[in-house]
Image 1 (cartoon, each protein chain N blue to C red):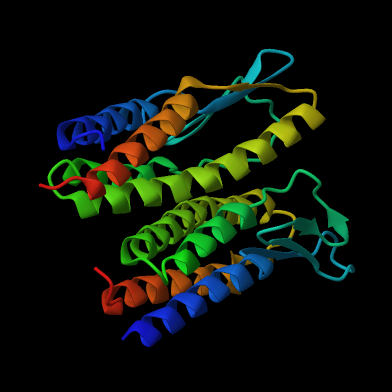
Image 2: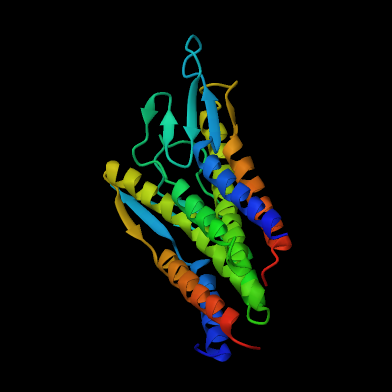
Length: 145
Length: 143
């Protein structure tokens, strides 16, 4: 059980870190009918509109990686693993609430520019949710108590 | 060792501070002339919104995850495990809020806005740290 719990915690931490490099939200928009689509993508480390980088983009990756580190330390102590999993849940929950609104704002604010625009969650948020579930799973099978 | 009553008192103080944070403004940006964007836990309010601003509002319910973690902290007054879950989750959520606030400040300053941190965010940070201190301490105290 010790090995299973450690493996799950490593997997959860790795998934959380990988998630920060994947898109959290994506908006595809055609600014003029004859132009190609421009992508507006937010990850844990950058926000891009096409090739333009938003230099004030939020660094969501920092709290996510911090929670992942706590989860890793949890291999040694069950309570730390539990706190790490809870921190991942907090990061994911707050990020989800922000993204949900940002995506609907993208849609509402730009639908007149391009009625065929696409706006939605990127894979990063699903991987982050999966990491949270894995971390709680690891806590359940963690033998140290 | 600070004793179980002190640890529980810290968790309770964290709950009160967090509850206050759910009411007070988190941050605001003033733009000339008389335009102000105020962000609270339950949405964004734009005072004297100019006509050329986008129709939609970037107005997330940041209060939702915080209300959930605060509820865990309340349960944590009796169940020490819930206190740890609530405090750690709230710390994670505050981490995301901090990243967002720094980003928003950057955008505001870039557009000549006058950015100010509100008491809500100060109380949220204080409440989270106080609750975390209590939650960690209560794990070490015998019942």
